[in-house]
Structures are given as C-alpha cells and as structure tokens.
Amino acid sequence: MKVFRLDDLDAERAANEGAYLSFLREPHMSVGLYALDAGATDPQQPHRQDEVYLVVSGRAYLTVGEETTTVGRGTVAYVPAGVPHRFHHISEDLRVLVVFSPPES
Image 1 (cartoon, one colour):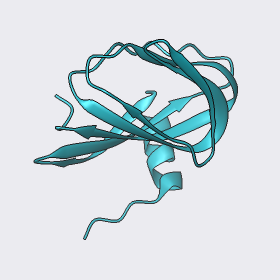
Image 2 (cartoon, helix red, strand yellow; image 1 turned 135 degrees about the horizontal axis):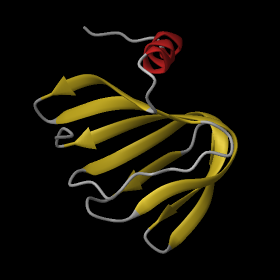
Image 3 (cartoon, rainbow, N blue to C red; image 1 turned 180 degrees about the vertical axis):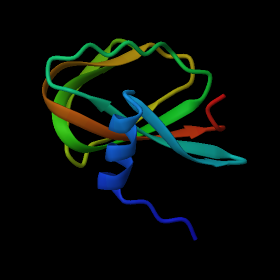
Image 4 (cartoon, rainbow, N blue to C red; image 1 turned 180 degrees about the horizontal axis):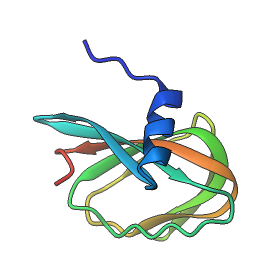
C-alpha cells in the first residue's frame, strides 16, 4: 500500500519550487499535485493522456475546449487527451490532484 498526505506533498512541491509534483507512477496511471496561487496564470498545454482533476482546495474557473465552469473543493473534472484546457481567474490558492492515464510521459 502507498499512502500520501496532502500537506506533506504540498510541502515537498513547494520545496522544489514548482507548481507540479508527480508522486505516484504505475503502469497504467500517474498522479500528481498541481498548485496555482490566487491570481496566477496556468501555463499548461494539452497532454497526450486523459486526465482527471480533483480540486482539494481553492476556487477558479476551468476551461476545457469550449466549455467553462467554476471549480472548488470537491470538484472532479475529466479532460480528454489532446484537448486545450486551463485554470483561470483563480480567486483562492488552488490545489488539484491530477490523475493521468496512461502515465504522464
């Protein structure tokens, strides 16, 4: 069994001075923690993998393709591979668990 604590992951991510920390990689998926502070710009580009986002804290808008919705704690969103997407109008520091399948390359 592998067990992770969000506070520990966020501290490790911050210590590495990055917005993203990949912390689990298995043959069919990978998982990471993505953090964007209030007012930040999301620089991500479309990925070759499907993604599932679970917002663990914060508030923002998420645009996937031509659709936009508000997201906050407890929101789960699916982003198909190759589709442009980004978080924007981040009003509260955002922390998001990201599951890639297949694993992020």
